Length: 289
Image (cartoon, rainbow, N blue to C red):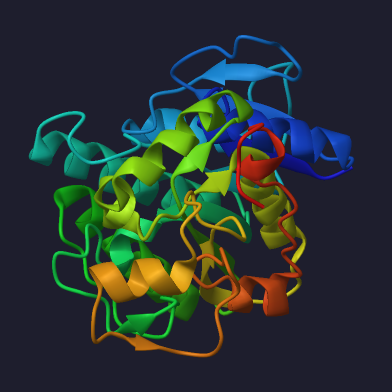
């Protein structure tokens, strides 16, 4: 049985990832500053901004475990604006550097980490080059949070250059949602501008967890990044109408389904076998199909 350390395993996405991995036969240990509400697997309290603690957590902890085979790095200040700019940048880039470096010390070559949709140019005050957005255009960080995420991707690039056997998968997650969050979705229809900032996108935590598992299971080397979003938007308004109203003149590539996400997951589907199955419409009685 392969053992994976999930940093941030007590958080919103982390909880779903821990369950997904346990359900698929992984031996899981949670590394976090905060203990999980439900103890499904071993937990070690770790400050990832402390390099010594990070190395110790990934090389074995007394009678808890003696090795780690893979890392799913999700721990971070989860969004811009929650703490001062230098604090979000400093915490996130330092913790990620420590996890990546400590993994190399521990001989771990299977790393999946949470990048972010924000590197695509959120909040899109400058319109995207085309829709749906994907991984093919250069990053456009517009905040200290997204700048750190952008630099993490470049850091992974160089580490994989140093070690050709290393696999590092960056998942550009959209706004993570749980079922309890979906009750608020119908209200978005009153003003499409409320969710324009991320192209009306979201990711169900369970589908996000599937993407993490698929990334860990992927057999390959080098650094790859993938947009991870749900298959639909948060709106009842058709996607083509949203794009025309809020991003006039922006090229639409391909044919959009009625509520198809404006964040393309084509690469994740093709390369990782990502297959999202959850939609908010299944949980809200008055949702438009």
